[in-house]
Image 1: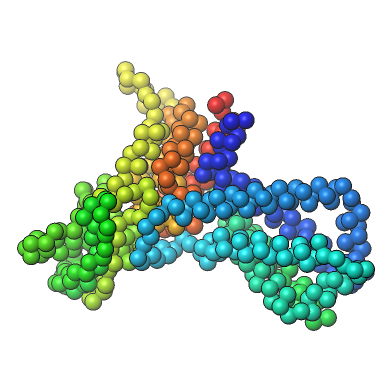
Image 2 (image 1 turned 30 degrees about the vertical axis):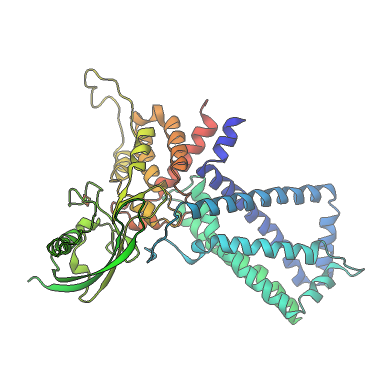
Length: 212
Length: 253
Ligand code: FES
């Protein structure tokens, strides 16, 4: 047991936790997006998708608990790394220039992460733990997105998610040691495409609903 | 034909490791563009000495880009603006007349400023002592061709071994992480059969030491690779991660 804790709490181990949980979230995003897109097929399709999810009963509960555990690890280790890294340079530079490695998405990684945490809490409160008062889930989503504030907040969150995924995806492969000259270019391209899919895919829903 | 330029230097001056430092501004007049950056500092120091002032302390040794002693952050980039170049090999022709150069020491919790631009990089020595070696018995010289190594592998190991330990990777890293340095050291040995027997112990010990010394954790910003005077690739960090995972989950200890 000792060796597991020793490994997962060293700097490489902490990153490993971030990578594995992060990649799991990527898989979750795929299924979440696929499900959400049923909204384009109309109210009936969306409601029946939601109902068939809920009919899974214990399975869906387990999946939710699994996601919660992953989230707790991702958030705690992320904050641990962030704070630790701040401490690694107590005196900063007067002038610091990007030498060519850093990208916008890598530089804002902790901030997009924290913003997404706020987003997820609000997102769950709005849709998951909301008192629907007899309305179906489509109506709830629809009325929510008639409020421009929500639409704008969601769009910003999806841009943040796209940036987070863009750096996170290839980064996770690098961290688990899968940086290979043959595959890394493919991994980076897939990451970029996936981040765009996340941004546009999730982002088009509030726009579509607020217009329809 | 040699040209001369005039520069304004803003140099970090700090009398000792515990003392408070501050930037001082100096004029660097009539600097030949054929000079190296360190020669330019020499000229400034000579003038400071003549004026009875304390010359700027900076590290240097070989001045030919192979020892890893030199290095400062120039206008926000370790070793200055030229790619794959140490500060001693950076020529003044890369600067324009009238430029202002802000010169700072490497900044990291693990590298204390000794004086001005000179920093204590003994943390790297401690890392090497922890695992940057192989144990070899003395005795007769082994037969050179007894262990065959492919050219490609030898090249990869050689690329990692090109690290001169200057510390620019730590200085450039937004997290002050030493993973490129440790990755290079772990890689150069892990890639070769002679390094394999101790590979699992080495990587675990070096990562533990790196954390203990107060270096940050890599977040794959790749700034290290961009400033490395020897162009060490971050694939070496991936190999370090791989070696650690292999060691942790595969070794009996
Ligand atoms: S002085 Fe030796 S590398 Fe610059």
